Image 1 (cartoon, rainbow, N blue to C red):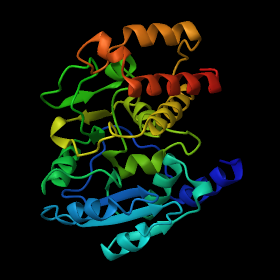
Image 2 (cartoon, helix red, strand yellow; image 1 turned 180 degrees about the vertical axis):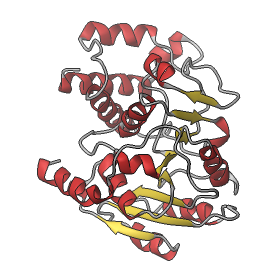
Image 3 (cartoon, helix red, strand yellow; image 1 turned 90 degrees about the horizontal axis):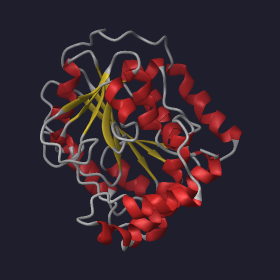
Length: 298
């Protein structure tokens, strides 16, 4: 993506920026919600995604839905408008994850903003209300669902991630795939539009370092599955995320020996090391991350 295109997104979103607030500031009761869905060629899934949002029970709260579409050619925009969403369109060449979300945020009226993938599906009609409920605590900057903790063990209760925990496991935490963030904080400091990915983790780290927390709650998990993605898609996602992390985290070893050690020793969610080493999807992920780190020198 060109510097001019990235600059265009920054310029359009910059009008919402304000001074960074301090942790502990309060917000009004029953704040309004804005759901921002980033999409491109999501006709197969966006209808269901928006229907489930439309079925949410949020007593006393106004809810608006904004779709930021980056050049769909398959009817995504028409489906979103038919579902009552407000659609903002940008050329494909201008898209970055952070930039598109900033553009939607600049048009959002809610005090709590929910970022949602167009192929993420709310599990029940109380999902939005559960998400919003965490923001009654003024120290919560953001919230999302996760099934496993930073150590890989099943997460059985909500966890408040502070800066100490985030620095121990900086690649685990807040996700804009299906997460919420406080609009006041976003206006003080927007998502980085220059990152190829992981703008969510970088933004959360910024606010955790200033005394806020991120709530990770398994009750906020959605149906959002990439395990059936093609090997090429798995490789591209891993490469993009590794390049994003390299822009704001300490460099990781990225030579061939480091790649071999990771392939041999890291088991992930596999039941055995042998299964992990034989997994083509894991191999695609490791190679993608290796390429992303090499490309950035991180």
